[in-house]
Image (tube, rainbow, N blue to C red; front, side):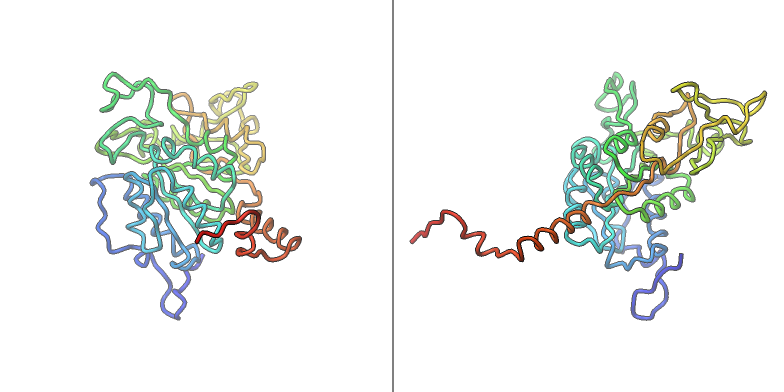
Length: 343
C-alpha cells in the first residue's frame, strides 16, 4: 500500500508524522514500546488522513498510547473506552477509531463494555495489551493472571481461574479475532494491518511483557530460541503445521486436538486445516483454548467473518423511520403530552 500525502501536495506521510511531541513514559524494556512503534509505522500505510484517525483508551499503562500518537485521541475513563469509542464511531462513521486497553482495564471493570461492543459489531479496532498483571498500579493480579501466580495481592498464589481473552471475544461473537506478540514485530504489524482493514469489531490480543511486575511471563513460548517449536502461525486454508523443521502438526482425535509428528505414517493431509472465515466459531474456540505447554500457542487471525456493522444498521433504521414518519420536530416532541407553564 502507498502512504497518502496530507492533502496539500506535500510528501507522503511517514511514521514520523504520527509521532507526537510527548515524552514516552513507560519502563525501559516494556513491551508497550514495540506496540507503539509498529502502530506508528502502520498508520501511513493505511491510506487514512491523520485527522480521520482517533485513539481512545481507558486507564493503565497501555492507555498512555493516545498521548504518543500524533492523531486525535481520548485518554478516557477506566474500562469505558469501548463505550466512548462507540459513541464516536456512531456519530462520525467516517473516522477510523482504535481502542487501546489492557487485560485489567478491558476485562475487569471494562468487561461489560467490551462484551457489548463486540456483540454489536461496531466498526472499531480493539487492541488489548495482555501482560497478565496490573502494571500501572504496581503489581496486583489481573483477570488473566495465571493460577498460582504470586503477586502483591496474591502472595500465596492466585486462586482465581483466569479469563481467556480470545474465548471472551469469540463468545461475544466478535467478527475479527487475532493474537500476536510484542517481540515479533513483523507479525505484530501484519496483524494490526489485517485488523484495521476489517469492517466490524476487530479484537487483537497482544502478549506484552511487563519487565517490572511480571517479567518473562511468555518466555516459555515467545522467546526467539523456542518460538518456532512452541507457537503455531495460523494461515487461512492451510494445515496446522509448526516446528522449526515444520515436522509437527495438529490433528483431531474425535473432538480433541492432538499434537502429532509428521513422520511414521502421519501426513499433512490428516491435519486440521485452518478456516478463519468459518461462521461457526467452534474451530476458532478450539484454537483459542490451545495453550503452552500442552499445545503450541496459536498466533494470527483465528476468525474473520463479515456482518453488517452496528453503525450501518443504525443509519438504515433512522432512514427508514424518516421515510415512514418524515423529518422529526424536536420542539413538537418536547411539547407533546402534558405540559406545565411555570410563572
